[in-house]
Image 1 (cartoon, rainbow, N blue to C red):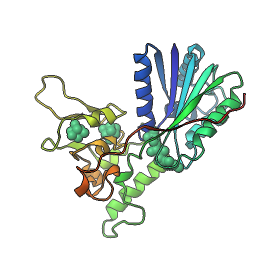
Image 2 (cartoon, protein in one colour):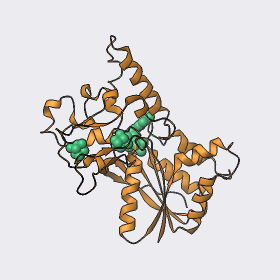
Image 3 (cartoon, protein in one colour):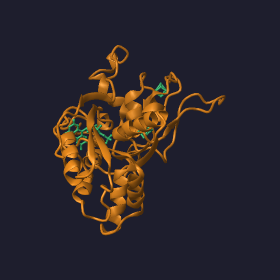
Image 4 (spheres, helix red, strand yellow):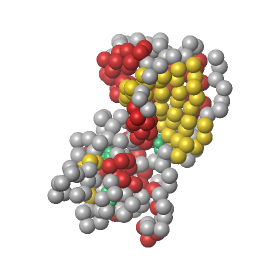
Length: 291
Ligand SMILES: Cc1cc2nc3c(=O)[nH]c(=O)nc-3n(C[C@H](O)[C@H](O)[C@H](O)COP(=O)(O)O)c2cc1C
Ligand code: SF4
Ligand code: SF4
């Protein structure tokens, strides 16, 4: 069976889920075409919002051949991000994402409170695709990635204006829901540095990186720690958050003074505190959509 997965992701969570879904589907013998929604949107805007863009044309061609379409988006302020809304509202544009859908499902990732995001996506798609059959949806709990590099709002140290500036810039980037290619937080934070004396070579950072920016050493290589690739890195901080021994530092993001999000307030509790499950299926979607 041919499957198309269209995802909208900024800090890598939804992309991570999409890649896992791709792997599982391919393992079951299906073929999967991945499409990056924000890249499509960016191209669409750049070309004046009037024509079928190359990425959309490819998407529409894949959709025409696919049996099932999966559409994934992250939750932003209890709904789906602006970019996704924009594409949703472009029902009649040449670059519509709708195409000739047959069957579709939806998925969202969220931090703590998904609101009605999933229901909204499912219902909108249903209303705009009268001939397509809705299969269902899931929302998955994924903690925010880049957040630990920001101090809790309002707790800046007045004597450290540089830190404050960095955090404000980060906040702006995240809240404007940019696409990774537009503006990489690493451009501000600097590199992700693996400390060889701390690294236990579990490669959790490799498996959690949705951008192929952390890679395992080649078999037989003298280097045993993962390699960080600046060109691929978006600076989402998933590697930092999921390192069980805190072997990754982000000097530009003052990570030594930040907490990994799942370890609460104190690094003293690091070893005793298990990480939150990532990508936990929070609930199945049971709403009925009009058809
Ligand atoms: C600007 C912004 C707003 C967010 N709003 C919510 C929200 O209202 N509810 C929620 O549960 N999570 C919220 N989150 C968390 C994200 O939905 C969650 O971390 C998601 O997995 C991010 O997906 P991505 O890495 O694919 O971008 C928000 C994140 C950002 C950056
Ligand atoms: S997650 Fe941490 S300990 Fe594991 S390989 Fe990566 S840097 Fe090393
Ligand atoms: S290397 Fe780390 S910060 Fe960079 S994209 Fe991968 S997980 Fe995110």
